[in-house]
Length: 165
Image (cartoon, rainbow, N blue to C red):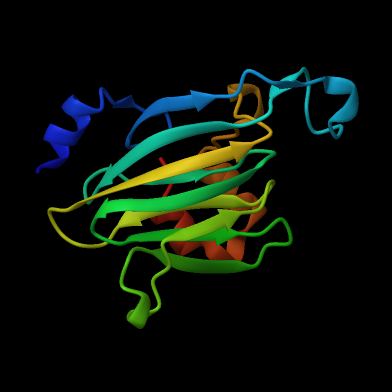
């Protein structure tokens, strides 16, 4: 199966951060704004989930959201998930199914941390799922320009330059 087959079968659309996605779940339950932290403006669904597909040509640019985001590996090549914490510490995790070589099938990015993802294998794709709680809302989504990220974290200029637009 090719990336294009998956995009067609799952009816994925382009995502502003890069790659392709489709929301597959949005809880009917709602968390009222008055019980959420001050990072949130407005009510949020309890949880949301998406399919998310990246290719070796389409990376997910550095961005952040207020919520924790769980990544779940489904199919394809492993994915390198880059994280810059709120404190400015860089790390990465390989999401995939080769447990013996350090890949993990699931990983949670902490809310407020910056993250980006890429498929390292040439001419390959990765299909993952992302679950967010409280539920995702574009009001919580920050997609900075390259210069903004470099100003925030100058010591990580090389990886930021590679994974921003």
